[in-house]
Picture 1 (cartoon, rainbow, N blue to C red):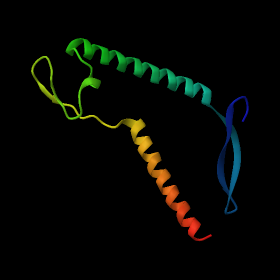
Picture 2: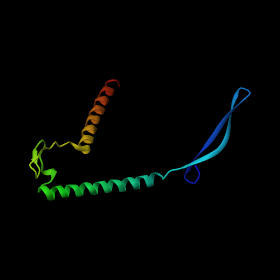
Picture 3: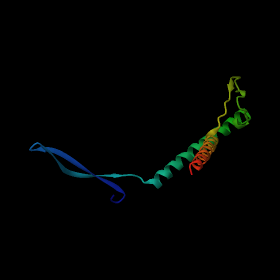
Picture 4: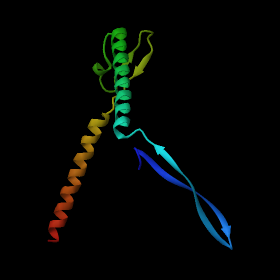
Amino acid sequence: EVDGAWLEPTFSSRTFSGNIVMEWEEWNATTGQGLAQQKSNYDKRLDSMLSSLSEAKNLYTARYGRSLSDVGEHEEVYDADGMRWKVVVGRGAVQQKANYEEKLDDMNDSLAQINSLFE
């Protein structure tokens, strides 16, 4: 690595007396933006998307007089044109992660119990 760039050699091959001979031709430098810059770009994009989502939620609330978070699970709602919509509420990533970690803890407890039987 030189000045933040990864150097990779480029080789060519030729045959000499039945043997393949590798010859060095040049070095190619590959420069990345670095982890800190990638994280900064990701955070900016995420903030922009969250801002757009917030704006869309506010527009929905202004138009229909209530937010989607006020709608119960599997409740039917109607838009201004009388079109019926069925709302399905998911658990979300936070709840899924909590459920996963709970199952993982239960499995680790079971494994610890089994291990204690063989001690």
